[in-house]
Image (tube, rainbow, N blue to C red; front, side):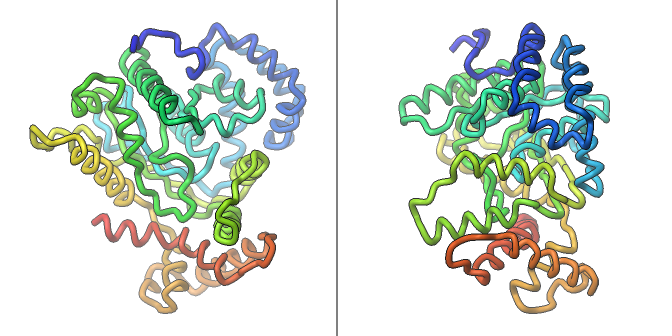
Length: 382
């Protein structure tokens, strides 16, 4: 595949498309309502006027996205920290592969923190299942997102994966633009954060037949995202019961919108981004002649361990472990107030769940599992 092709159906928008995309967004009533809901009281007319001053993607991010997300950080988090000290050449283009906590904010907060360190923002991989309104498609592509096609037949999926991989290689190699992509399709409902081998296979497609050389050219860096509190935890637990009670249950588009809205506006406490050892360090140690299945399995397992190894753990994670086990094994990592506060938080989240035949004991275990898994996974990764 020619990596210089336009990739028009999936690529992020460029500077030539900013003006007409801004005009379309400003005129869209759904966009007006959505932005007004998260703008922190800034009148939409003020935002629209500022949008119309933007001629480039960089200006749009700095004048529109940066203030909105910075305002969200102040209102909905205690602090957000980015530590990329494991990367030697921070100016180079990388692929950040991370666990996935929030549909919108995982990549948005990363970009904000990169900007604050004098670095460029990332292009963002986003599934087309989330682009349910024209304004969402326009907004994310203007905000440096490219589209991952979902729900295709097997042959179409292979073609889409080849196109996606070629675009990613083109973006790193020719545009010198960093990328964020999740380690798996969708968020891990139980916060166990296992890397999907299919993601690694897709990334290898666009750089020639040599898997090792293809992946080396992408300069992949594992990134661990640790939220103290996940405002969507109760929605994930609710979905688990609905699927348990009805194996044919499928989320609707409105459910994704609800997750996006609550994920953005809900309280998250502290958030920590920490990069791990770059994948190229591990690839250099792989023996020559390793078969494809073993190589993909080895890389996938290493990525998962590296992400698990770099969790930042909070008192609530340890409290969840002791609540789940019914003991005091981790009591040295939290105070009595920490435990009381988490117990109150947990009950408050459970009270929000409205499902037929509500199974509170099951739902409680689901949420506790989300907060417990980082502790267990980090211990196992060592």
